[in-house]
Length: 397
Image (cartoon, rainbow, N blue to C red; front, side, top):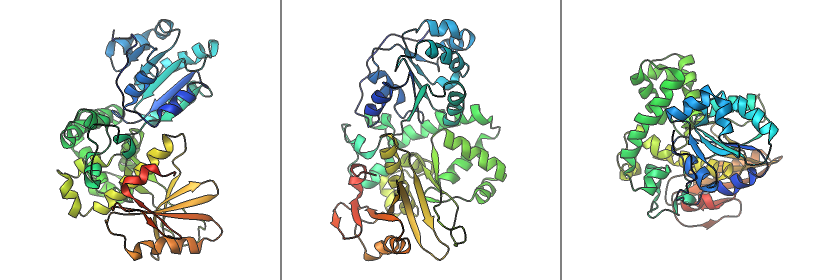
């Protein structure tokens, strides 16, 4: 069997940790989901260092948990950290009975890397008994705790936020290339049983080419040489593995000429750069997708800031056929925060036009506006807050 003795792992501070500790005081089971290699294991083992740790990636522990779940749970009567629990889905049904008999808060900590499968299993077996959290790759503020954080915007976008790149100083392009080969392709085989991996890889690269842009599944499927239904199924797997997410369109009146397609974003811009064949940060400066990648980086920083503090992401976008477009809208109760992302380093006057027009067209809503740009200077405008890229994670979203 794999090691199950308590062990303290070194860990840089993560924004999710205070919420993880708090939720563990309420529920007998806490489940932390997120992409592979986002730091779930390190966070949970460091936060609950007194608990035994079991990886259900290990074949012997997985077989024990699957073939004799009652005896398996009896070995950990006082609780444990069960890693990659989606590998032993039937265990959750037995865990339900166990925690019903002993509902002490924080007994079991679960991690999983396949969102849809884990959520379905949890909703069936542990409804009302589990607190669900997401851990995504490092935000820019979390990167500052590492020895050599990125010094400029394009390095930050190119490297992305997977912890091992920054903790071990591994070249980002090398690590991300191996990540695609080992984790992404393996997980896809398990979920979809893809016969033509080359076609799927082409599909994945086409998705990277559409990050920060509106999604047309029919066109995406046609470009990849697969049907609309296949493209939809493959994209769902990318979402369930926390590689991409969709930002729905916002509208108030169905009769208006509003473009309702969602936008597609990668959770990690470094992974998108790797799939696009961008080999150095310097290539980003004049790359045709520079603006789209910057918008994706801003979107993911906001997404991380919200979910790592226990909020729903609540991200939307808006575009009308007549030309008005808002990159991101953040729902804040009855209000809306309108966000424009501009990769340029010098603020231009026309950058504010859409934000001001949107606020004027919707006087019935409480709308505040922010412009996030690629420069370093804070600027004070009466109606729009200008935020330098370095300070995105410092703002309340």
